[in-house]
Length: 166
Length: 82
Image: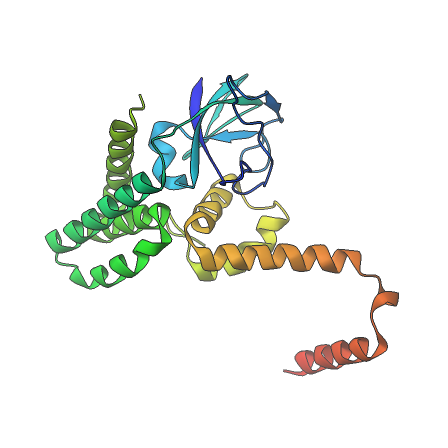
């Protein structure tokens, strides 16, 4: 299956610092690691997982072997980077951050919890992962777990549509 | 520890050793890493812990200067009394 993976700007894993073989006029080399969710294996995002892991650079990744589905990620024994998603750049990240901030204001006002708005604008410099969380957290405060997940799904739809991902 | 979908900075501090020891459950690890992904302060704290553990792992007792060892022992004894 194909999925997505955020890396640091230097091409290393966000948490592992593993230096990924990057695509260069073709897919990167295969990387292998026995899956053990959150400890080992090739970790990647489905479309719906993107808001939880929004990072600096985004790639499409091909996964091979038995893929373990996790709540907010998938883990496989093999993977290779297919291409960089060029549309995910600093301008796009800023646009998505603004979208999440506006949603957070909207949810707070609609639900009479304006006090939550105090955290929104000061959080913007921290970027899209935090603002996505802030919007979902305010939805949670307004409507509980279902509202949290609905907001995360809405963020994923927004990203998929504008990044041209299916 | 955490409520349904997130953990706080305080919880990150409490869980950091378990995270580095890889003894957290997968769901806990996922929430921990999501928090680290958006919280620069906790990301910095995690990296400081990694650096400290890495540095301490390389130092043998003989490499600690006597005055530093005395200061540390004094600090630990004081810590024990409080």
